[in-house]
Length: 120
Image (cartoon, rainbow, N blue to C red; front, side, top):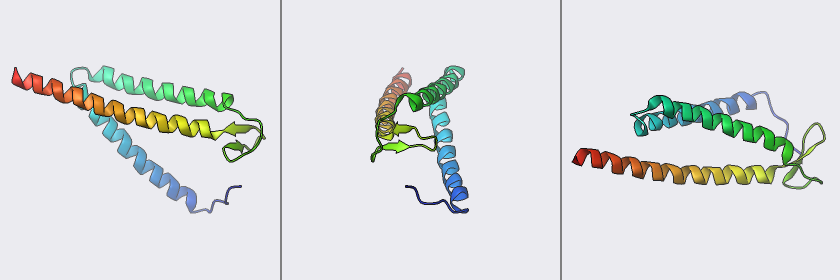
């Protein structure tokens, strides 16, 4: 079902994933530091909490999102179990959209609060 991985594919994939993660982590933490400059410990603790919660949810969904027969969105794992990857994809897309909307809202609130401080 999947094409074989060549020896050079995995290092390239790891390199690209590392660049993406470093960019995301750096930008995320800088944004939290700007938005919550009055309480940085709580802000960074919130990042840890969100990452842990997302990892826990993903871990448990791996075992609960099963399907009955192989199809385009029902993938058979090496151990023979069938997993519903469409639901995972939808969760990722919805989470990304909510994250973008949440960022826009937080940036608007931050801008409003900063303007209010400057005008006082």
